[in-house]
Image (cartoon, rainbow, N blue to C red; front, top):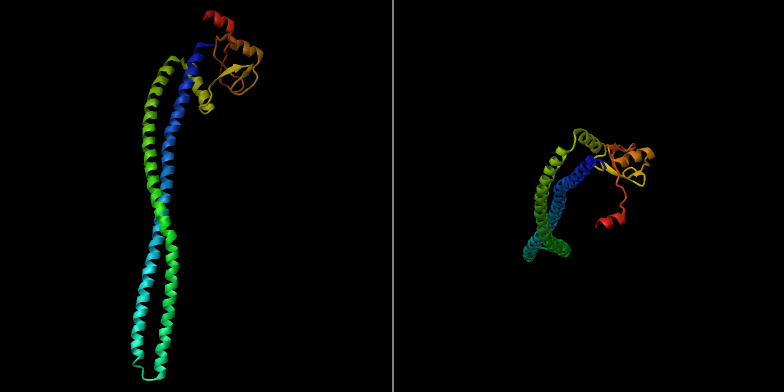
Length: 246
């Protein structure tokens, strides 16, 4: 294997780690934004439930006031009936009382409906308040965890970037230029690939026998004739020789 390939492989490993950490650092604020948005929607839902419950209570209070006012009006009409001068006046008072009594019954029926509607509304509000309190705790915990993880990632990124600078300084300019070109072409994925079973392990194209023979010599930097990536060849391990060395 050409000695520069070792440096290229090391540089690729560093870049892959850096890329992974950068993606994680970028993803954490998006994750926080998602859970905060969900929390905000739940807050708005609770506010809507509270508004509905408040409107229900307000309507009931108004109906109770209307009923009380109607009852007072009936009381006055009954007093006036006692002073009626003729049968027609008496009947007129009686009809007006019956009309108001009908309004009272309608108001009482509507009050019962509102009371029935208020029970699930009140239950929803209490459940939502409890769930929201738990969700707020969870969101704050996740935000704290995200901040701590981001700080750790940033620290590790700084270390890896320093290591990358050292690695780049050891790599010849031509090899570095080719590395950056290939990395840009393949969007920071695989830059250097192993030649295994007569193929490029990245694009799986079969290598020419003469090309493979030259690659095995390891005396020059070589690139896949199909995808353009750095190629290297690792000779198979002879286990008997390895055992003898041990």
